Length: 212
Image (tube, rainbow, N blue to C red; front, side):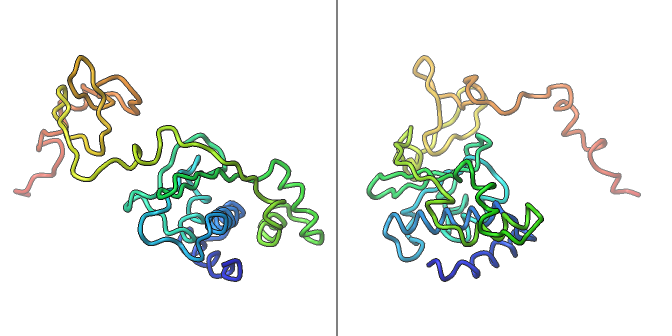
């Protein structure tokens, strides 16, 4: 698979619009994870679950190698602002967390000694550095485990407060009743803007006159 590195970088560049060092790291992470799990190609049966700790360039690199995607529920982002990702073989439950070593930027100079531009030096070096000089690998345990993250198909319930449907067993029970996480006061990434909401469905405000 490592012989396919240029092809993967080309795919990532086409997806992202240009090639950058973090994409290279993402591609290298994906290749090493597949190697450590013993896969000679990306598994096509949703066997590999990837959780990245940031969004952006890194994820594009990981996706082209592993085939993981949000649409197939094999890719998740838990935004810790870290250039790292956990790869899980859902059949065995084994999870590996990969991240760049803390000194990779400095080590890049060794592998691109004639390149004075730091960014370009990193772009070049990350493509040829040995795995053990580029990436750290740790065995980890998912919390919650993969089967809970993935859940079961066809499971749904309505939030007793907002009435919206909740899938994938993401509801929270309070007093024996199911709530979505926002209504339960857990992990809400938004709050209602009630002043604006009152006018959103006023067609005279939202749409130009059809009689013009």
